[in-house]
Length: 140
Image 1 (cartoon, helix red, strand yellow):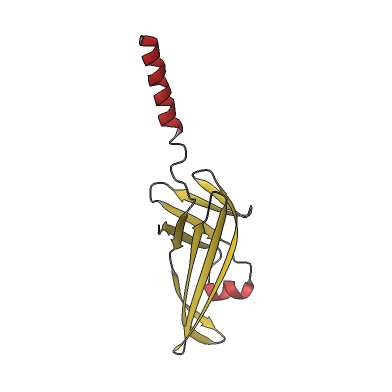
Image 2: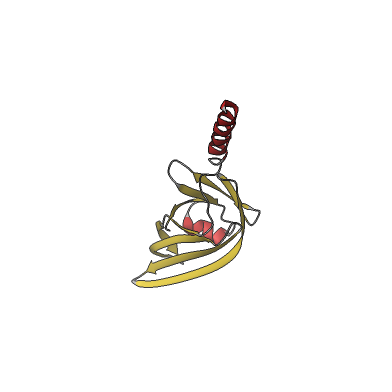
């Protein structure tokens, strides 16, 4: 009887520690980035730029992403939105979008961080920084 209790207790402890290895399941969650607000100069005119992204982890390996940019120059506002989809891997702390864009999950802050490298020279000039760090918080 004592042996059975010991084995059951040992099994419970092993399950407790092994189930904590992945504290978050991204499948079915939506994450929104911090909005980047900057004063920019485009074509010799000064204005403001707001840029943000939303990532929807549709299941354990697929995601959809939406990027929105809004520029206001001389009282005129222009907005553009683009969506894409792809695959991701995630081990509970580190992940990879489409096998090429790394991301990390910060367990303490409950945020996802993506560092984007800007390849386009004009976009680098407008944004004024390369790379850009986006911090995502869970929406649902």
